[in-house]
Length: 85
Image (cartoon, rainbow, N blue to C red; front, side, top):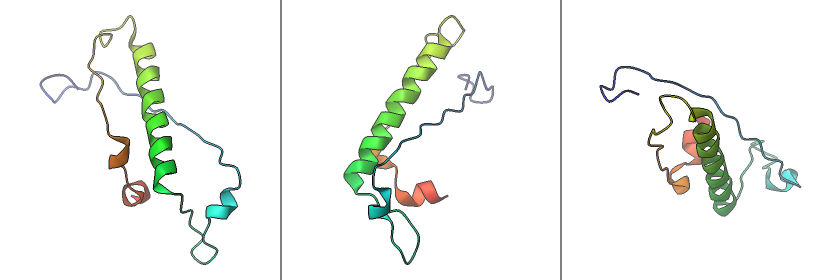
C-alpha cells in the first residue's frame, strides 16, 4: 500500500507446498483433521514466510517497489484457528 493507505501499489499470491512423510500418523481418524506438533507448524510457517519475502524481493527488483520495506512476521503468531478461517 502507498503511504496514504488507500492506493494499492501491487499484490502477489504465493503458495508454499510441503510434503510431510507419514502424514497419516498426524491424522485424527474420528475428526479427519491433521494435528501437527506446534514445532513443525512453526518451522513450516518460518520457511514459508522466508520464501515469500525472497520471492517478493526478487520480483520487486527494478520496479518502484525495489526499496519497499517488507514486513517481518512472527511464525509463532499463526495458529490453527487462523488457518481454518
